[in-house]
Length: 108
Image 1 (tube, rainbow, N blue to C red):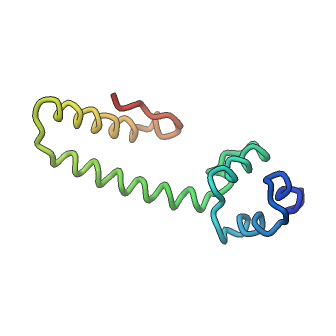
Image 2: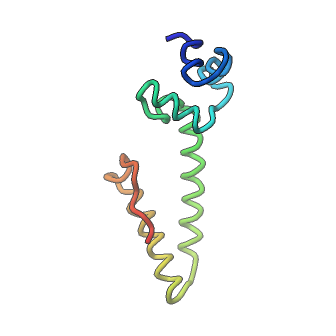
Image 3: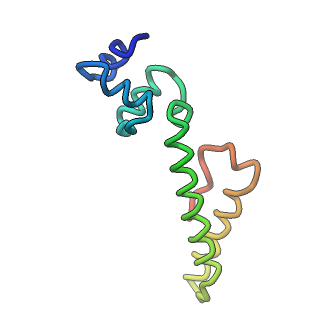
């Protein structure tokens, strides 16, 4: 398909935005990214691997900091149970069988 044909499917009047997305000059909005996924039947993370990896690294860093902060807490009672559940979720999330799953266990 041409960039113009893809642009028309996505609702753009010309191929300019599609070209900018392909060259990673700009990141599409969530709705447009999901539209690409619908057109090509390929996950958004595969269509925009650079943006996905950058986002993933940022989130992993924030999760590591959150886990460290939670481990430093000295909560009692109800707060202790909530902190324990969060730490358990983080532990399960890091296990090999969870790494390929889109859905991680919910925090109760």
